[in-house]
Every structure is written in structure tokens, then in C-alpha cells.
Length: 226
Ligand code: SF4
Image (cartoon, rainbow, N blue to C red; front, top):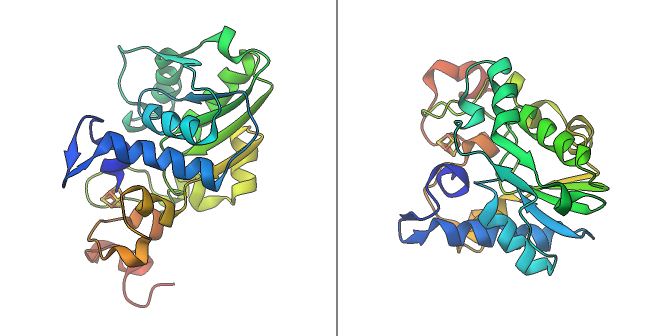
């Protein structure tokens, strides 16, 4: 599922589904599920852009580039150490103050993994004068690690595995926080719901239902695990 949310290039077509369209639909679903009164919809660039466009279209709140991306540094969540990650965020995004100052901002991002990046971005947006920050996430909460090749941290480091929504909002420093629902995500991909989809997508990092047995992790996820 993360290919549609984050990994695939936005101009990809996966199994006949244009990734850009799916991301926009996710934004529309998010606006319908978790609307809020605000002045601007601002993506965390680049991966939050299509969903923010969808959110803005569905909500009628103007889309603005309130954060500008520096294109010369890598993706932060796969950087190895906290120190490098912090530095990465600082160099990677700059606030567009005239867009943010005095505004109630809906901030759209693709995921929250550790929460480190989100906290930095929210602090930056507030420091640029935003009056309110409402974060909307175009994936369901990432509560489980990936064991199929994506470098997500262990569960103890996943913000959503350790905290409820209220606590996460507090830790990230936002006025409100919402994630797309699992069914909303499947709807954005053209299915009625997850249970009706009969798809073979992996969504284990949201559900903990691993489609291929994790023989190395039976205590946590294997037969009979809690
Ligand atoms: S657990 Fe599944 S959906 Fe999540 S990143 Fe890994 S392969 Fe993708």
C-alpha cells in the first residue's frame, strides 16, 4: 500500500491505477472524514502535494505552497541517525512566511513514522506565524514494522504504536491530528472498503496482518501471539 501513498513516483501507473489520482482521492477522503475550518491547505512537499490538492478541492479551502522544498537533500526517514535526520529536515524544507503568517493551516503529509520529522515541520510552520496547525495524514497510523524490505524502525520507535491520537497530537504539537481510515484508503483506490476489496495488497504496517508468515518474529506476530 505504501507504493500508492509514498514510494512510487507520482507519475507511475500501478496495476492500472495512476498513483497521482489515488493520492488526490486520498486527500478528498481525508477532507470528507476529517474536515476542519481553516484558511489554507499546505502540503509537506513533495509527497504530500497530490493529497493536499485533493483535500483543497473537496473542502474548498485554498491550496498553497506554504513550505518550500530544497531539492538537494535525501528522504529523511531513511537517514540512519537522529542527528542526521534533524539536520535533514532543517535543510530540506523552508517556510513560506507570507502564506503561513496569521493563518489556520491544514498541513497534509503522507505518514508519521517516528514523529521526529512532523514535530520539526510543525514547529517551523508555527515559527512562521501560523495561528493554528491541523495535521492530516494520507496513510492510516503506522503501528507495525515492515519486514519485507522497507526500512521502518522497530515498533517501540513508531509513534502510532506507542501513543493514542490525542497524545500523538500533543507530541507533534498540532491543534488537531487525523489519519485517513483504512476503508478510506481502499475507497481512494476504487474499492468499496477493505473487506470488500478482495485485494492482495499488503497493509501490514497499518493492520499487523502480515500476508507472509514472519518466522523470525513468531513471538510477536506468529500463531498464538497476542
Ligand atoms: S508492511 Fe506491507 S504495506 Fe507496509 S511498507 Fe511493508 S510491504 Fe508495504
